[in-house]
Image (cartoon, rainbow, N blue to C red; front, side, top):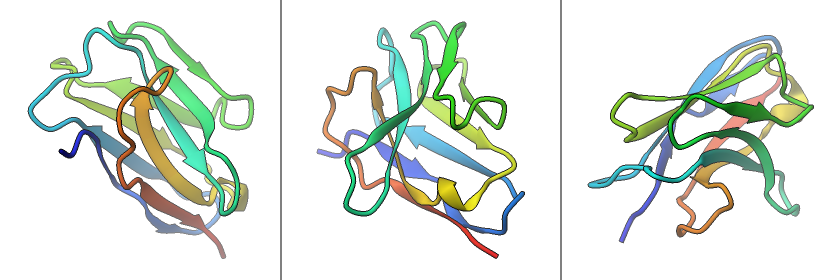
Length: 115
């Protein structure tokens, strides 16, 4: 059973932007906090950003603070990650999950930043 579906990744040049989406088919994210994570090849997933269950509070890893923005829709069925001023170090597979993660991981979406 697919629990999380990430989309919106792609290839961009340094300084570019992407907007990632994460949906949970036939369900909502309430009442859990949700987060975006990323994984570099051969590395463990790392936490990137968090949004509270009521979408009023957000938190970011230092490496993305000021460049990434996490948000959620009013129905709490989709969360987003707006990524601006992307840099090569942001190249990774991006995933969403609860915070802390407790759902089965989706396939993620690949973000590649390169000139």
